[in-house]
Image 1 (tube, one colour):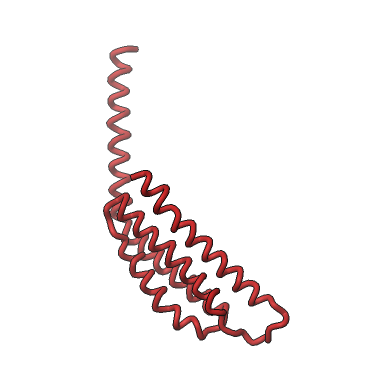
Image 2 (tube, helix red, strand yellow):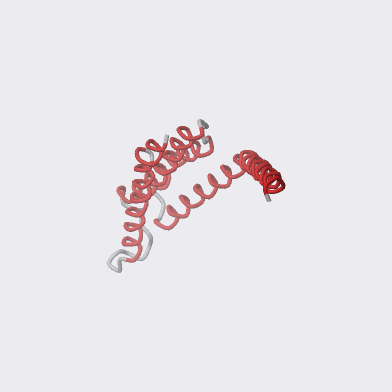
Length: 148
């Protein structure tokens, strides 16, 4: 489990971050180039694919990681990957900053939905941890009562 999570599934997570950073570098270079016209032009295809593809690869890796470690599918993240795939052709004709804003909006929406969906699981984990802590403290109190 650890080998899969920290080796095989960690690599695409990092690759997604690097792709996003590469696309962001292209976006910044494109937006700050004084030789380009002041009206905003669409991002070049590679930068657009690196931006959206990097985020999609990262989210897909999170889905695979969750599937392997927790045996659960993160459906909001799967939906976000699909949404990003649909948004790429839409974003291809938009100005650079609008393209980036659209990506940010889609990512924030996916994060909010995933947070809401995972709320019961987080509550359950907290409850189990609290019960384990209380049981451990009771056991330690009994031991102290006998030995001290």
